[in-house]
Image (cartoon, rainbow, N blue to C red; front, top):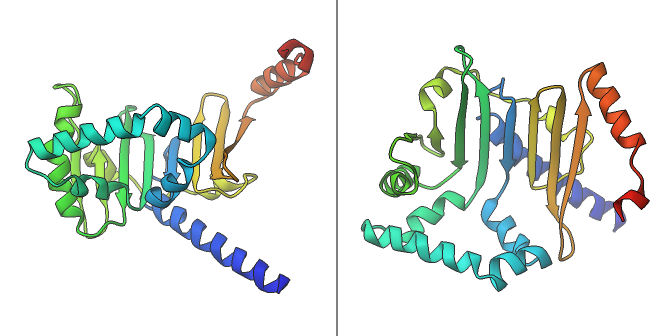
Length: 227
């Protein structure tokens, strides 16, 4: 029985990693910052039951306010709100990279989604109303995914971010982030515990100077100073 339980846990872990790996394959290989979250809908349903998120989303009625606003925008544009919520049914990926001209570019990827072209039509009507008039984003869809962002540079970028850079030394989670800017790498994972949302964050210095700064900060810290 114990072996069977371990086997099941390994299968579940493998399926979870397969999901975030599939999303990472959609992101530019040379991204300096990424965020990947698997199964948004299911994990959000669990997360909002935690003490902190229950207070923010339910007791402060934040979720209700957002839902009412989205539904108002949808109905005002002749849309079914379900067509917009569909974006959050599955996985999500966000990446920032530097293009050949030295400019930061970003892309957000949603999916896999049933009939993403229907979602694209809905987002094209609603998204401009949420952004400044001079802020333009491209929107595209293929058979399974929706893409929002700087899509022309994205189409030219090599795909396939190395997710092993992110998950190494981190506890498994449903979401991961990674940022390699400056002299250090920041990365972390997030998962649902028993009525709590747990995050693990690592900060890894990449130069001798940053290592010395980290050592100075940590060596000077004490619990008494924090009290």
